[in-house]
Amino acid sequence: MKTLDKIITYLFAIIYLVFGLNFFLGFLPMPDLEGNALEYMVLLSTTGYMTAVKILEIIVALMLLLNIQRPLAWLLIAPVSTNILMYDVFIVGLPTLGLLMVLLNAYMIYRNKASYAGIIKYC
Image 1 (cartoon, rainbow, N blue to C red):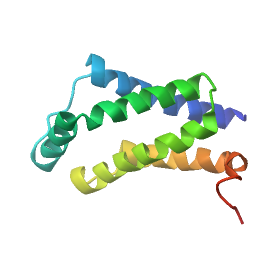
Image 2: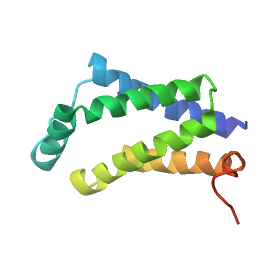
Image 3: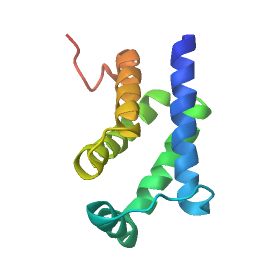
């Protein structure tokens, strides 16, 4: 694995691990939400959906940090990264961390494309 790939992997994993653990431990302050953002977060939190997402984030972060099935981890977290981008664009109105996460995720999936040969045919 090249140096850039290692940097991306560990940066990505640390971001998801910190935000996943923060959901349960609350060591980072939450921003004040209003309007659609507040309604969206209340709905996701009350249904238990966010708990499942945060558990997935922690598991994938550990998979990446500990080098356990990294290609699988990149695929498992892709929908979460995409959802963060969609939230940023459609609810907040500004692509921030979500854009970075999708770009890093897409790059690493591309870098590991040989691992997915059995499920995806590349040109």
